[in-house]
Image 1 (cartoon, rainbow, N blue to C red):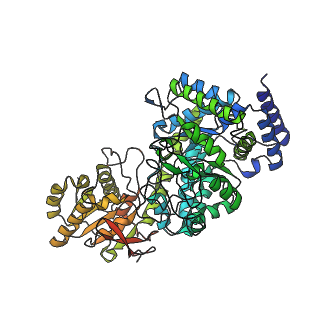
Image 2: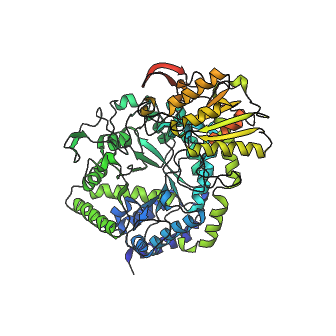
Image 3: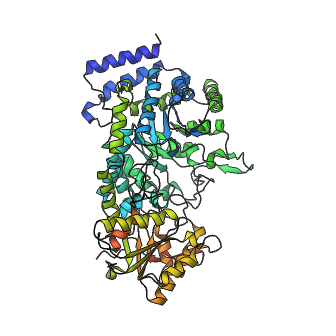
Length: 640
């Protein structure tokens, strides 16, 4: 019998002696059901001592399997099954490509864990980016309003409630790790990637809501991974497509970006994700970019000064550190796979996230070469095996504390798991909570005294920047109509970012009320030569004002566009542009949808108060740029 399997059998017997029950399949185990810290440590040490070097390295890798042989990977196949049997990876991260429906995804995840465990594996982190709002992977789940919307409500309990719903849905699917909350402080209006994923520009607010969010996840035994250390909020570049640089020192960051992470570390957070961002004031080591031969500063994900000296040393963090995806251009364009792995491990990362996209037999060959290279670097002393052991021990301790190591996946009934997943994911109760939270987030910046608008006998023109937003407006209107809160004629148009502006102008001429969506996510939208959306909305607000027609502008993204609409008679921010991809014949969403745009209609027509306030300051515009003068201060909102 394999020695490792013998050890696992011995540990199972020890569990019986200690009287510890295995966690439920849903992951909703109480703290008292988990093994004691002293007993846990000895088990983890025993497991570590039984591992080969290859297995240790596999434990430090979380893979993605978005597709297999060109098709979305939504169900297990023979080749992929061999992958999960032959390699004992630390975990898998799932994406929308892996999601068919709740039942199918629950079955896929269970098969992964069963294959891994049956071959002597150690249970896997099953991770996902389910932040809520604009970052959601569950195609039939409850998306929730998103972080900035939750902070706009002024009630941290709302973040906990949203995360509790997300946690319930993840848990029943078999997902045990959420790469959330996003603890970034969105202090830069030019930031193209964080925006509404951040709770606020205020560090204390961001930390308070991140802690509440974590609490909601933890109630369902979901590991919360805080990101992106030491902060991605003050960048004007996206690390998915470039290598950003922030010129602040860590001493300066301690006043802003690091505040939420300090709050989290003081509360005992379990996992932190590092950012692919250069901090040249703190990291002086450089490398030559394989992309263009430039000398570049090592980003935080590859920086010993930031991950080990500062995060572990100065801040005293003892949990697991994972890199952000190593497939992102910030890393993939500038470093070879082997160099990125070496530098990340030497920097202090415990987990290499998505180093190679697993997508078929060719990718298995690439993974073998990758592991061979890592193993050789350990054997020749380039990478310390002692450091590898420390990382794997941290991983095993986290798995043990969350019941992943000792869960017997073979005893879980697949049909029952699928049935429960279909029942819980996207349930009516969850959507009711989602609506209430979205309603409370709506922030009225102008026109409160003209609300609610009575549409009875009136003609209302609804215009979305794209079809999904138009669908969201249609859903919101017909939902109110079915509830008896809206009467009148409604016209729905997709102005297509300005390409369908003439048709909208004609419709406005005969309207009694115009409702139009706008959003902002990067500086190019302030440039009429790059984007016609904001100029188009400006034209409509001016036209409506000339004709004496009330016009409500819904700022659906990060609300920096609000300073562009002085002629709007009603102006409301909702913090999430996700609309409705498709509607059925009863005007109901098919699949997951964004609740925020429909929530604006709840406020416009009197079903909800909309008492939100701004979590960020909105600057005045000067042509294609923002100024330092506030148009609306953080905390603004016409709440009465």
